[in-house]
Image 1 (cartoon, protein in one colour):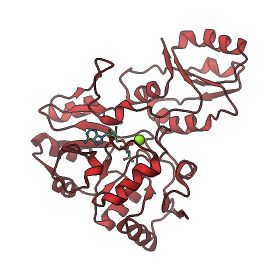
Image 2 (cartoon, rainbow, N blue to C red):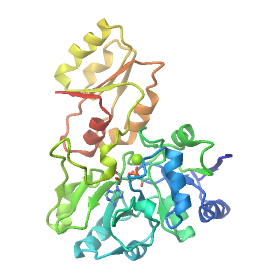
Image 3 (cartoon, helix red, strand yellow):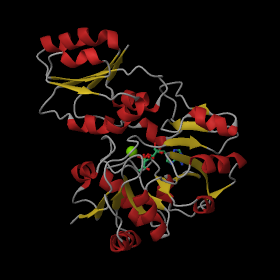
Length: 334
Ligand code: TXA
Ligand code: MG
């Protein structure tokens, strides 16, 4: 398939939006930027189109997709039995990096929700995404626009790497601001429950509605609440060891003795001079680390390095960034 590349990094031109809308309305797949990561969009009411998403990504079909809308009104028409606190959350955080899991009113194709009675919906805070969704006048199902298992794309070039030739169109809107996926919060209960941490934190949600819980898997055999949580995620091409600062030297020397080519991702300045194949700075704070993490992971190819040693950053262990690092890691060494 010929993949059309459309540049909206500087300006959004009406003709281009028309082209994208025509493709989506015809049931084609279009990758577009959001404030978190790039999404792979299809008309959420078109079952065949949504099936193509699973195929292009190589994604298991029991993993539901997030539906993207442009307004609160559109969000509410797709849902039922919405608890009162949800409108408060929407007013506080949307458009923004938060997905609400709510009872579905049944207006999206069954494959979108993987047969669940709930649907995950969000209003992305990105001028390109909003322009496309409003012009299309349809809810747009869009998972992250990567091949299943790979880190989510934060630049159009990452989407090209994974999906060129497999989808109708890729819209370039430049690098994404946040860099990791939205907070997914189950709003079907009295107290909201975070299923996937993201830029909007439990504390911010609790500040608006009084309380917020975070889902933690208790037993290894327990079925995760959010189907997506059971799959391998964000995996770089080579094993990643997530390592406490105190253990870095020891581990690096062990791998050196084994003649491994090492990429060292560090937060603490003193590690930058260790002689290894590659050293990369994670970033000066959590937001910058999140913005660049997936690009760093994508850049470490197996023909250049054999192993990644990543310093465990020093901030709170329940942060969204640490969550993604843990999921990318083969092993966590504390
Ligand atoms: O920031 C984001 O959320 C990006 C951009 C493109 O919007 N999208 C994204 O989609 O990360 P995806 O499909 O890669 O991740 C969706 C997550 C999965 O973990 C899935 O299991 C969960 O949301 N999810 C979706 N619908 C759900 C539902 N009804 N109940 C529970 N979890 C749901
Ligand atoms: Mg994803």
